Image 1 (cartoon, rainbow, N blue to C red):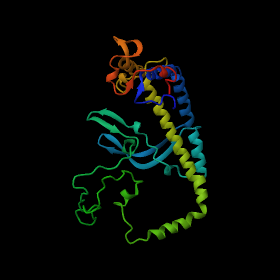
Image 2: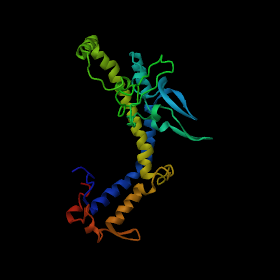
Image 3: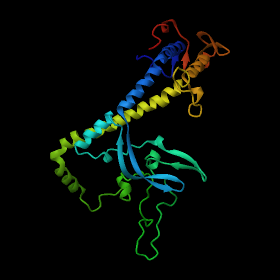
Image 4: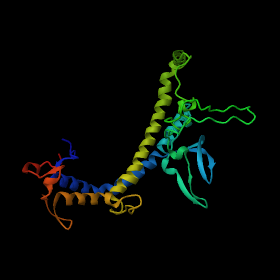
Length: 299
């Protein structure tokens, strides 16, 4: 059985062995953070600039892309350069949205949202509206007909993005009178001689850019959230705990102490011995050790 694979039911000694190993690993946490930071600098970051729209005192972003930037000298920069050299369009790869970029600013009229990416950095389905779809009024002189008559399909559940085809076609359309098989065959014949080049020169490069961007996001989460939730303010050179963002009761050492109090003989929170306490029989997830458990507690 792999080490530390018991998660829900285990002998009491197993938790002590797990906690001891994990607490010894604390010595590498600060080095890990430095390594993550160096790796993030090597990977770089892609940013997309969108055209802003005024919304009251705040700023809402449209989906109209204006520019594309990437960290100079980074791995992503070299991939993007190679992609563009092969004829790729960086605006087609992704929106490269960053949800944590949205800010709330206090103004004379109250707190307003200032976006840097469409939807605040999120792409989500639309909620259902009461009696939707709504009819739109015709122009006063009748020269401009309404775009929505009220008899069309509802937009509930459709992704709020111009890149979502059904949303731009006013619904999920059926085949109707068009022979889609013919269109599909035509498109296949147009590009089949270059399928290999499309894959190797464009599609594979796009996936490498996306995967590297996703890796940077995962490393950032590990550095700023996972490790901070476990050890913020507890180790040398670690940032102090921000109790507004991190619950102090969720720190690794606090959780271990809580489990020690639950599992072992304690007095005023101090462990007297790593033996199962008298209340172990009432717990449904653990049981006392037997001599065979002394060896191989990591299993």
